[in-house]
Length: 446
Image 1 (tube, helix red, strand yellow):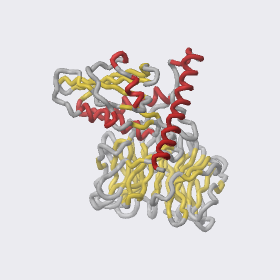
Image 2 (cartoon, rainbow, N blue to C red):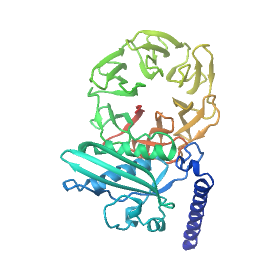
Image 3 (cartoon, rainbow, N blue to C red):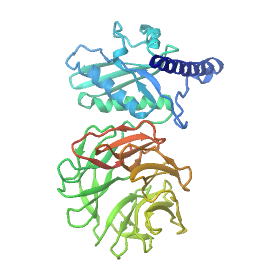
Image 4 (cartoon, rainbow, N blue to C red):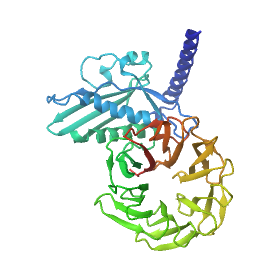
């Protein structure tokens, strides 16, 4: 019986590959004028099939053989980038075969052999080291047609080879989807590896983690500015939860709001000139905006209920927020100009943590059966979709700058770590594995 199912799976895979090959045939031969500009992957499709890509070890093309480790480490970075994108299935190198020579041109490649193992795309790479400098060349091929799709070179310092690979990954994704990749973006998050809650930043894939606070107390809710130059966050280092601003270039930190009571949940306006947050200096927790000197500009929400977690819309004309005015935490939206408020969530007893994407969709946390899951909806509360299920508690959603990915924290392995997934919930991948727990991610622009 098992062999029968394996056979059926193989038949389905072969049938799917045939369909894609036939589509490529139509494009190349019936519409030759657009073949060179073809977009292979439709990132707006409801479900995106993955392309099998083979990435063999890179070839050392130079005379300095002192960095042999780069032959495997560099393609591993690109392989992980393409896997995290959700558009590719990097193939196991155990299925690869040795090719003679170091040439990267199509004439030196036996595409039939790569096709036999199921590869649809092939990425070849070579590098040269001279002193501390590194030059890398990659070439991407369509295996079926035996044609080069992309050729790129990158030059930089050997110590920053990961950055170079992220740049090349973005070039591959741009070529095949028509959209920029996320490989050069960063995350901020809360970690408790030291026993205290501090703010950390890392590359989007979880590498190059470093602390940006050493308050030795509780730091919470980091939020990148729209230009990526500053992070607003809360800290208890001087008593209650006050709002601080850290400049990432100079390292300078200054207090933005230290009013009595709460000063929490910062959300940057799209123009980067003001911040919405919850303050309770007048007694009740309500939502205000302040400028970057900490001056109150406007009280957006005034209600007897508790109003928290503001999130600006992409155009800055609205904010989503959480209120318990109906008896339980639910998500509402405020039109800032008219002052009109509207409830968006009605399903479930607990909905919180709204995050508004650049593509005008709202991610939030919803409780079901005692567990927290990430859901999305459109700006009017419709087209509700649950993205996580039966995988621990999933909280703190935030969008990538392009609105095509969501970072979130999950306890599915016991402790909380940061994960990313495509906006449709596919391809959920863990990106942090630090000591302790990592929560409350914020995604920086490139």
